[in-house]
Structures are given as C-alpha cells and as structure tokens.
Length: 250
Image (cartoon, rainbow, N blue to C red):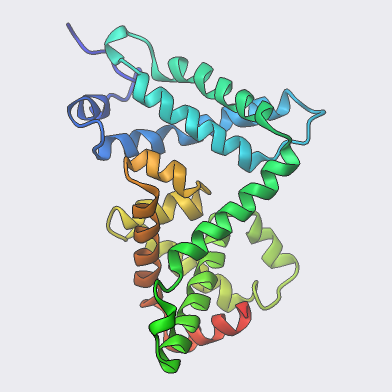
C-alpha cells in the first residue's frame, strides 16, 4: 500500500520517521511545521467570539496542546490530510480550554506560572552553603539570566519593533535592540535540545509543560536544559553588558 503524502506537494518523510521513532526529532519538526496552522485556528476561534475577553496567548497554549494530541493520533495510512484531521481537534481543545475557567484568572495564572518556572530553573540550588562572594556572583548571574529572558521575549514579540521606534528607553535603546538581534541569531545556532527549548519557550511562548510534552521529557529536565541554555547565551555577552543589564533589571 502506498503511503499518502501529508500535503499534496510536500512529503518529506516526517511521518515515516515519526512512526519509526515516536519520541524522536521528527515529532518536534512536525510540531513546529504545523504550529502556525494551529495558531490560525486559535485566531479564528477568537474572531468567532467577539463578546468574550479572550487572551491570544492562552488560546495559543490550548491550540499547541491540541496539535500535539493530533500528531500522536494521526495515521497517514488512512489517506486523510493532516490539516483536515487536526483542525477539529485543535479547535475543540481551544474551545474546551476557554470553558475551563474565566479568561482573567487564566491570564494572571499564565503570567505568574511563566515567571515562576523561569526563576525556579535559574535559582541556586543550595544558597546557604555559598560564601558571600559566591552568593553575590550567583545573584548577579540570576539578574543577567532574567535580563536575557526579557530580551528573548522581545525577540519573539514582533510588536516590540514598533514600540522601540515609538518610545526608546533603557529597555528599548539601540544597544538593547542590537543585543536582542544578536541573541536571536545565537539561538538559531544553538545545539538541540537547548535550541529547541529556548525557541519554543521564548520565541513561540510555550510553557515548560507543553515543551516537555513535545520533547517527551519531564518538566524538571526542561528546566535544567533552560538554565544550561541561558548560561551558554550569557557567555556570549561581554562582561560589561552583563553588568549593565543586571543593573537595569534590578
């Protein structure tokens, strides 16, 4: 039996690779390929509910979760195009997520969750046993890592380009923008899984839990990879820039 293409013009063998290794790199590649598709569905659901106070970031989280479910359940041998198979499941997961709780509470919880899991992944594991010098260094490193997180958030937020041109300040200066661009370029050359974690968390805005599902890893492992990736990126900054950014974030 001939295996049908996932798209009429693009059978790149990803589904065959996924079948051979369900937790391998093909799953990530398929997820990233169809992530924009899932977000279009989330945007459509939002347009269809004009009276609801819906946050697009929450809808994107639900869409990403629905996409993962569709990837895991899809059988290309059935002859159905993946987009047709996935669309209903993604939309259903988005609608179910909307009904789970009020949007105001979910938005607040999402922001708090993102910031908390970042900070926990970067925190010193045994601060009581550090000398004064080591404690100060750990505090400085934490401030720099959090600043890197802000810059990576900027790299994933196209709206910041307009905002920077409109009202430059300490965060939106030319030096800051140049560093954001340099970091975004560095992320593109990072080895996996570090590059995947940084890209999905900061540039695509996914929580650690969704990334853990995508990579078939535990959340604690994602936190470790996140911390190691920021340490790698921090080493690419001159020491003078690190001190400047730690002062700004403080």
